[in-house]
Each structure stands twice: as structure tokens, then as C-alpha cells.
Image 1 (cartoon, rainbow, N blue to C red):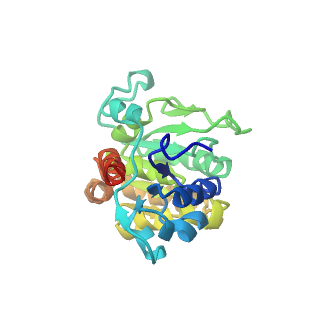
Image 2: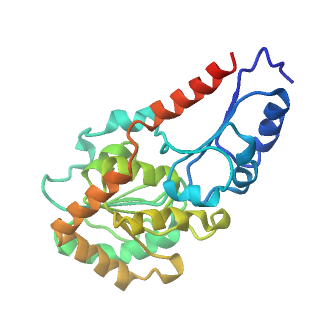
Image 3: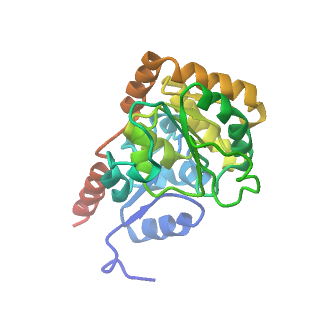
Length: 273
């Protein structure tokens, strides 16, 4: 165990592993700042929020579940690489300027069930003039089932910020990091929350966007090709609505989140001197 002279404070993003650190910090009289990115705070966050010097939340909705402690809405920081990629050209994808672009991302592991439905819908979207970039992950057994010059399946794509910036519409899971990025790029979305996420927290995240009319939400058990096909067609054929959704997504964003979080941590450390 380090002594107080070696550790000035604790910053944590919650999770079960953070509980011992929070307890130890309190015993040593050290400041603790906890950041919760999800709209439904995890169990450790809910339990230990009163023990923390300050709890920072990524979505205002999270404050409804934290009844005690100092709670501050600060958004969720994004990695510097993401910000550096904004407005980068998508030369490697060879997508013509001006065509509607639909991007599908299933998270780090892909989303096989979503992928299957997307491939059923893609022909209708392409017939309507759209191009489709489909990040499938590397665990999709049906990845070679559909081919078209305007359909680009990729296991992963490393310029996701540029892709979101260019896309007219994104179909995605509803992890907090992805939604933070979609807000920053002001990208309309259709969200299919991962149904097995702890306490169904992705659904709470998706509801933030649905309530703000920045996106639409479809439960996975309600996901079907006909509905998804028609939702997307209706959106890409309604530029005015997409513009409204984009503006509302941008209103959710906290562009200086990293600076806010860092300043709050510095303030807590300064108070201990």
C-alpha cells in the first residue's frame, strides 16, 4: 500500500474493481473523483457516490439515479485520436461526394444479429441511392453473404471519427463511448442497445438520444428487416429531419469534457495541499 505522501488522490471510472480503491482513499483522507459515463450509473457508482469527493456524469439523466453526493455533469472525454481524425478524408473508401452514406458499427466485437438484418436491408438502401459502410467485427460467420460495389463490409475501420463525420446516418449499439462520439460529430443514429449489457444500461443510454430526438431506438427483440429498412429509407429521404437530428445530437455533446474533468481533478488535489 502506498503512503499518502506518494498518492495525492484517486480518479476512477467505477466498476467493481474501483470499490477497494475508493474505500482505501477515504480511509487515508484522499480526494476521490469518480466518472460515470452511462445514463444508468453502475452499482458501485450508486453505492459509493456519497463516499466520493465528486461524481462526474456523462449524461444528465444519470443524476436521477444518484441521490447523494456532489454530482457534476461533465460529459465523457473522447480519445485524442478521435478528435485528430475529425474531417479526415475517407480516400480509402472511395465514396462519392454527395451520396447518402449509412454506417453500421456494432461495437468492438461487432453485432452478428444486427449484421444479419442490415444485410437484408442493404439492397433497398443502395437501390435508393445510398452507400453502406458496414463494420462487421471479426466474429460474423455470414460476412460474405452479400456483395455490391456500394456496400463496403469491413471487420474494423480505424478512422471512425471521419466515418461518423461523413455519414448521414449511423446504426449502432448504444455504448456510452460511441454515443459520446456520435454527439460530437452531430450524427443522426438508429440505436439497437445490446440486450445483455449489465442492468440493460445501453437502453438507458439510447433513451437519452431518443428523448432528445437525436436518434431512434429499436430493442433487439423488436428488430426486423422490414422495419429497419423502412426507418432508414424514411430518414435518408428526409434531409430536413436529418439536419434536425444532427443539431439535437450536437446539443448533447460536451466538446471540452476532457478539460473539465482534468480541471476538477486538479482542483480537488489543490484543496488537499
